[in-house]
Amino acid sequence: MEKKSAEKQTMSLTSRSEAVSASEKGEPLTARDKFNSFLSRVLYKLGFETDFSSGKKEKIPVKQLPRRAWNGVKSAASDTRDIWLNKSAAYDKPLFVIVIVLVVVGLVMMSSASYAYSYSHYGNSMKIINKQVIATIIGIIFMLLISTIHPGILKGKWSYILWIISIVLLVVVRILPGKKGVHRWIGVGSLSFQPSEIAKFTAILVCATYIAYHYKEINVITYKKHSTKQKAARSKRFRYWYGLGRNFQTAVWPFMWRIAPILVLLVLEPHLSCTIIVLLIAGTQMLLGGTRKEYFLTLLAFAAVGIYLIVFLGIVPYGRTRVETWLDPFADAKGNGWQNVQSLYAISSGGIFGAGFGNSRQKYMYIAEPQNDFIFSVVCEEVGLVGAIIIILIFVAFIWRGFSLSVANPDRFQKFVGIGITSQVGYQMMLNIAVVTNMVPNTGISLPFFSSGGTSILMLLAEIGVLLAISRESPNKIM
Image 1 (tube, rainbow, N blue to C red):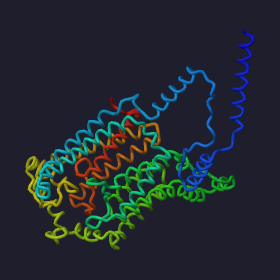
Image 2 (cartoon, one colour):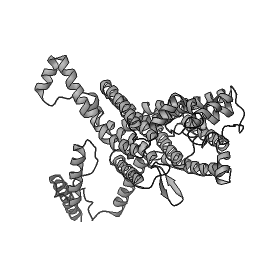
Image 3 (cartoon, rainbow, N blue to C red):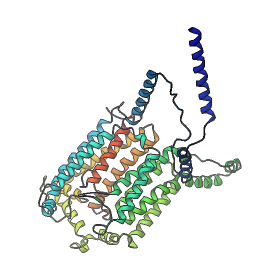
Image 4 (tube, rainbow, N blue to C red):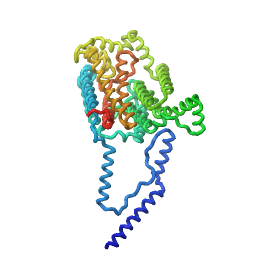
């Protein structure tokens, strides 16, 4: 009996070694493997990264003990759970509290700013705030669920899948009939959403993915030939210009491939405010990712010239008028300058401590749609300078907390995703306040957590969920 058992053990070992040697030799690739390999090469040539698997996976022997097979299944399930879920560590509590405070204060101020407009247009003073509350509750649920998912799954092909979806949605919204001369919404029954909100997050993901894969190439000069390296060692001027050229190939051109289609489609909507936000987010990630300052300043100048031409050549029909109105809103106070003038009246009448909650006068059909882009002027009128400064400081606390958690995260992809999300909220807050105070031309930028819009609050809270997930692995988090 012992001899037979020894023979069986020898046979199993022999068959196992043969299986291992066969797997090492390799087998013919299937059609799917060949397609993945071809797609990987094409995307790599375009500057994209892929994580498509190639080659045959090791086959599990059919004759295997049930207990051993079950243990393997449990181990695989455990590994999958660890990859997808991130419950091992708690998220940053101060960041969560700041977000909840912004959400609550935003809903309270919107209820005051919107009821007059809602009653005038819908006969129900609570219709707008009710829709916003429902969207916010759904957004908070999404935020909490997304915060338990490891953000690393968005790296690689999933970010590019979302990139393709965003471009398709932006094309579709351009084809569909517009509202008030713009194409920004896709209607699904009684509901509608803005693809531009998804495009912002997509731009963050694709830029962060590229930086995560190519950070060393962006920041370190590589030489294709040994003779070129020797020439660079002899000449500082040659090394400077060669490094500048290599930096363009690794730190400028790949970002242009990713961002340009989104920017062009946003301009065609037209949606100039979202175009500016995407440019600012991508520029921030590029600068912190290692793009040379020479290129960054050049691209900034080109962006400024491009926006100028878009505005004054009539690509954005209302652009030139808004710039002229911004320069002197009181020149046409009852026409094109009406919104700017009424916003300034609301801010000035608020004084130091404000007229009190619900006591704004400008929201009674003086400010058009006061629950949207110009809600901060109503906030200033009702809570005054002190209240406005407190709200700004809460935003500043969010930005500081977001950057602190993101920069300290050891994973480079998560670091730059967190920087992008925090930058988006910060840029929108600053530009919205600059618009309502007439410091910059009116571009239609919403105030995060305050302005009405179901798609905006849903996407914003979903992004905050990603930021909370990123905070779980940050050494700067506070339990």
